[in-house]
Length: 601
Figure 1: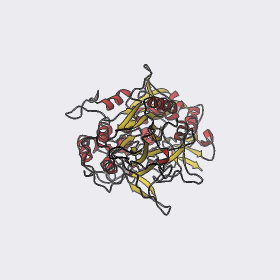
Figure 2: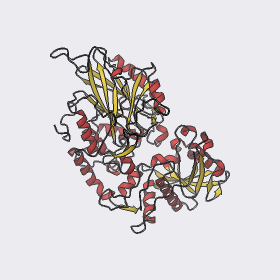
Figure 3: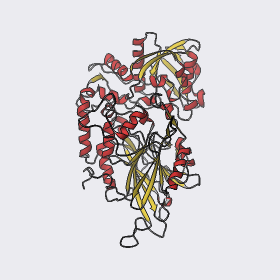
Figure 4: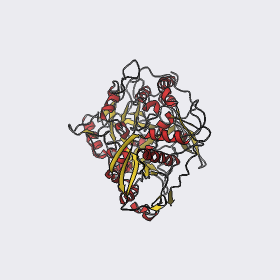
């Protein structure tokens, strides 16, 4: 079967292969080089009787976020470590290519599973987001995804909408988008630690068991316990989120009682590798090597009954081993985000014990390069939905003179969005003083090069939607100067101590961020100025922000204490109005300098 031909029976066409990657370019986290000497993987002991060991291929990815088309700018590239120690960037991503890579990887392998680590939908480009991510679910069905955990973004539109994505049916407000009713996901979403507050039971399946002949592998899916802190209150209303480790341990025991001893945890929580290259050797000895972040504590504490952890959330690429509570190395993987990578893990199943022979587990991340044939079924799917989205998405909303990036402690696009919200806030109330924007709400850069036929430098509505897809409203509220100072300190303290969230600030607000200090002291209080004047702790300031931040989201509880609220239109409208009013084909907007925050390192 050609690599680009769609599968006709996704439940029967399951394959497995041993990992074969060039050592110089593949990140291989092998726990040990050899199988037990009594047998080799997949051997047979008679004409029909299988051998003791069976290699099972686990293909995995995470944080797709509805990126069906190749992501633009830096969001569509990965860093690759070269044999001489240098790095280069490689264009990556797009489901037309992801489908081909996955299908090629499965060729010749009878035991193969494809799993994901959450955030398949949500914060999606217009092609998917405009249609409540139905296009992405259809694409995942075509990619032969077997199972995924939920992520925090699966709750952007609430539990009821998540249930619709799982089970199918037309959208309750927007209805059906075609002649046929939306069929829903062919694969199960797992939500072991997300409970209905009324019933105390998981809102979706907590686990799922993959079976082929005499081989059984269980999957437990959880999202991060802190999901309510990073999702709008409406999205998680009526739900409770439980501890990841306790939940996984609970269902590992359930699976064990059912005779399932090989277990993989799908965890929408992640870490931060010391190297940024996708093929960085996470397990190499030396200072600074390894991985940090929340997933490390989870991996160290999850029961040894779990054989591997597929993770996500941080959008970082890594293939690492972390010792389990018994001191035994265990594979922990993440395939970056946006469909730019997939992970190929070999799990060696021991038929005598029913467990994974951990001494034989190996894994590597692979780039979803764009030098392979496009999968025709994915091209057809994208074309179908693009035809529906084009009248809305192709409309120009502004002009830029160069790429406006969204990376860095302070980003040019962050400044632009904050300025747009300040300008819109002043339209609602001329007394508006400043605007604050959370960096996680800026999902992509604005790129100068044309994506379609619009021409270089033209910003389309679709591109704006990709940048700000959440439909948050722009809210105004009053806070005191003392509260404003506290908000800035909450960027680097409290819930944000370990992983600071630096707010993007509107023109006129300046301060120094001293990274040589610790905690809240990193924000130098005496340096905070508004239009050149020190912030007065007793004065009242009118602040514009999106509704998520205004509700105290992302670890900013002080913003949730504001008063005299005024709710405006959605944040994409504010950006569109700003671009339209301040740019033209002959006078495009230049990338802001991103010099409002002085950083001391």
